[in-house]
Length: 184
Image (tube, rainbow, N blue to C red):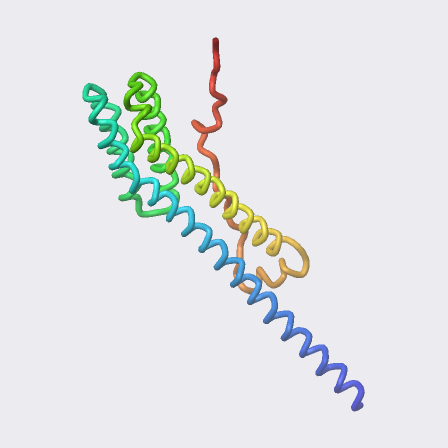
C-alpha cells in the first residue's frame, strides 16, 4: 500500500509539474509575441519620425511636387493615428509606398540626390526598413513557436485547458506581393 501511495503521489507531482511547465510556456510565448509586436511598432514610429526631416529636405528642391509631399504627410499622420497594430501595418505600408515616390523625385533633382541630409535620411530609412522586416520575421517566428505548442501533443491538451488558441501571422498586403515590372 505504501508503494502504491508513492506512485500516486509521484504521478500527481508529475501532472502538477506538467501544468506549471505548459502554463509558463504559453505565458512566455505570448509575452514574446507581444514584445515582437511592440518592436514592429517602435520601428514604424522611428520611420514616421524621420519623415518630417525628409520632407523638409525635399521641399527645398522640389517645390512643385506638393501632391507627393502631401501624400507622404498624410500617410505619416495615418500611421501615427492608427489605433491597432493592423492599422499601423496598413498605414506603414502606405507610408512606405509614398516614400518610394519621394525617392523617385530625387532622381529628377541631382542636387537633392547629392544633398548630405537627404542621403543620411535615405540611409536611416533604409536601415529602419531592414529592422521592420526583421521585426516582422521575428514576430512570425514567435507565432510559429506558439502555434506549434498549441497543436502538438501534449501541448494541445494544455492549450485547450488554458484557453490558448492559434494566433495569426502577419500577412503581406496584396499590393506588396505584386512583382515589379522592369523594362529596358
